[in-house]
Amino acid sequence: MTTTQIIHVDPHNPDPAAIAVAARALAHGQLVAFPTETVYGLGANALDAAAVARIFAAKQRPTTDPLIVHLASADQLGRVTLDIPPVALRLAARFWPGPLTLVLRRGCDVPPNVSAGRNTVAVRVPAHPVAHALLAACGLPVAAPSANLFSRPSPTTAQHVLDDLAGRVDIVLDGGTTTIGLESTVIDLTQTPPVLLRPGGASVEALRALLPDLRVPDAPLITATAEAAAAPGSLLRHYAPRAPLFLLRGDAHAAQHFIRAAVIALHARGVRVGILVPDEEFAGYTDLHVELVGLGPAHDLAAIGRYLFARLREVDSLGVDVILVRGVADGDDSDGLGPAIRDRLFRAAEGRVLDATLEAVPALLSLISDNIARNE
Ligand code: TXA
Ligand code: MG
Image (cartoon, rainbow, N blue to C red; front, side, top):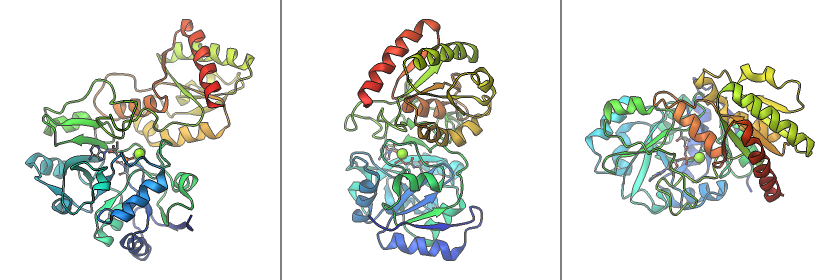
């Protein structure tokens, strides 16, 4: 355990003296959590294998799951990657700084543990002024996964970082709430054609303008074991609250009937229920004794995305036995944040997705009894 120092910084115009303290810590092999435009990252000098090992230990992250290396600018790509294809430079020019991560061939100076032993490395240039100032001040490539404990929802405030990692990180730069709230889009440029590994802040539609042959796997890349995963971070148990979460597919009307019926049946069995629904659907539940948390306005995916992880943490902190979530962004759009929101909800549910029909209520009840029994 270590003493975690919290340094408040202006997210738009961070104090250079505060940034210098954090930059020195990185240069000395320490861990610094910092805000990016997506989520908070847990940073260490990417060229220092021992510092990188501390990231895995602090997060309790399997060493089979590789990290993203953050750069101050695309000019530093040559320090950490090899054989940079021209399309990488075009993507960098269009999307950086911003929420896009590129998987390229790993450069010789990057220790293997950054990439979990692979010969590739994921890189991105974040757009947040605090992240940029830190990267520029330390002059180092910085390996940084999301600053949460492994499998917990990603952190979008400094408080989330402290909730998971107080005593495990040397410095937390508190720059307020992150703006996008969902992690970067990850694409693998070492495969032909290039493959989408994780939907995120940069939309597939925008990427296709420069990468018309981008392969987008139908279902999220989800596998049961870290070793077997094509995208190593695509474990099913990810972003998961502690209480089992069930995702309901269907329109507002169907979902309301289903959730009400399920809540009444669950209450009869003494099960405490938390529900997560779009703000405008609150009225349908206020007469029930449930913990209600709003996802945001149903049609404002930017707002839903920004607060999604915070809401998952919130509903989980209410001490409920089970969480029911009305799925949003269920269209088959490839623009905007829809795919990223669907992906994160699906993972939070660990694949427990049900169609919201009244016939499905008994199935839900038996699934819930199984899951609660297993959690005890
Ligand atoms: O927005 C973000 O990307 C945030 C901020 C802090 O930058 N970072 C983040 O890191 O989400 P993390 O570690 O939570 O997710 C990194 C993802 C994982 O799914 C990981 O498996 C994948 O990127 N990844 C990293 N290196 C890879 C590689 N060499 N090949 C394939 N996938 C890789
Ligand atoms: Mg993560």
